[in-house]
Image 1 (cartoon, helix red, strand yellow):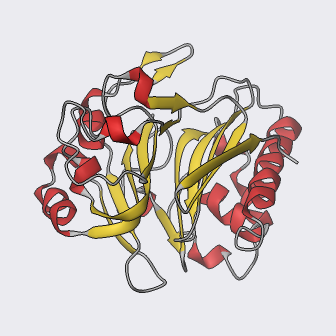
Image 2 (image 1 turned 90 degrees about the vertical axis):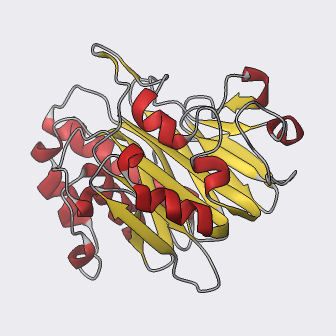
Length: 277
């Protein structure tokens, strides 16, 4: 499907997590290990584009996206070596819907918000028109791609992501579930996503059938600094949220339970149950 990463903490160079760890996000673009899809099997390659988004000294984040595989983009490696940020996200895509084009690469950007997603609305085309009619008229012109992920983002913005992110994500998921039910769609909606305003990261693991795409956060950051695969420069209070761990030491990672919303802010992570509503 896809793999993504989010970081919040003291500023670090992006290559600290994107390229240096043993099982970095760039490595996952070629060799994902936890991309099991019920009824399909393992989907190990995520080569249908990539993107990074980061916050610096201005409210609006920077972003770089392309359609080539992440493992084959020298510009990405050069940028990751030079960009130092206190909050950044990155995504490698395996397309399940929507063409391979730059506007379909994650993260999606609106004002100060970034959004990235691992999951899908199966048979999205059957309910796309209904869902996009729900997007606020002033936001609709900003939908430039054709993915279900971007529609989910603009639904959340419509429902007040900037004012109450947990509630907006609940309303977005509920609206998708209602559209699926009314259309008689049986395949489950899967939503493992992250949204950030540059201050907090909201990370969600949810699916209709409780077989969500995986999501983890780091536990023992002192140990992370010493793991095989160079973590030099990683701060003790840095927070990492990932689709799958960046190394093979399970004791350093906490898997988020099904139907859980994670909120990362200022050196701490809290979680709460998530139900569409």
